[in-house]
Image 1 (cartoon, one colour):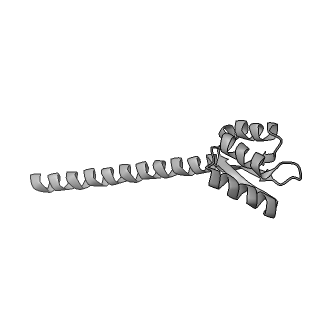
Image 2: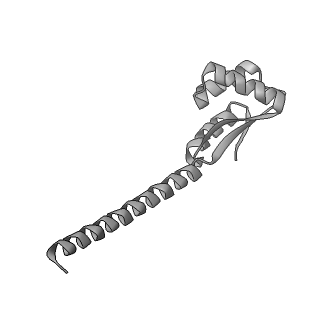
Length: 112
């Protein structure tokens, strides 16, 4: 085997190694994305009650969940007519203090 054939073979091997490294990197990135998606798989569900006013629910969602007024109003309407509504999604650690604040404000909510 001549010098040029050896060089060509070496380049092919390097190219193959590079492809394997890239596919490994892509696989790791994919695994990280899946783990991130699994980590935000929790949600705060707000339930209807016969006690709180629309204004109180809307104001609380704006304050606690950082909803826009329109978003908070839509959630309040859904809760009223459907009995429940997901008002926030995220990791459990992110949602826990928000759910606690909703409960402290007298709303019925849970993390699922």
